[in-house]
Length: 152
Image: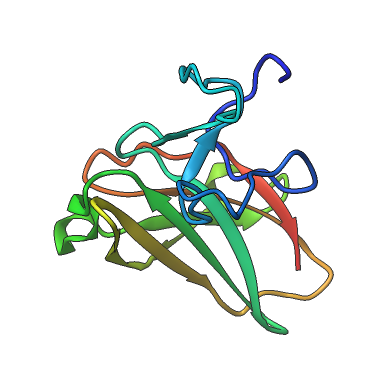
């Protein structure tokens, strides 16, 4: 596998064998980090660093609304009320004074012995055919992801 691969659920690329008994489409897996002696084990399961937002997804709700969803690998602790997710949204290229802060909601997401926090933030009243930037964070520490752009 190529150097620089990391934990992910890849798309449009090499994919895991869904018939494998250890494959779970909801798990992350490392394509170049298998420590198994079994030659059929070409990936391993892994977790993103705790408390760091991962698997960010944008969902179009309607003509003026977009939802951003993401996970934190934190054993569900970020889904408590004291760790509410937030997003910052602005027009692409706008300065810091134009940032709009939006509060979201979270819930624990469990499968097997793994528990993560699933976060949701809704961007509403967006203008169509407009470029925006956003970033997300959870918890009191408010460590944000990098700015990511999208067009509505």
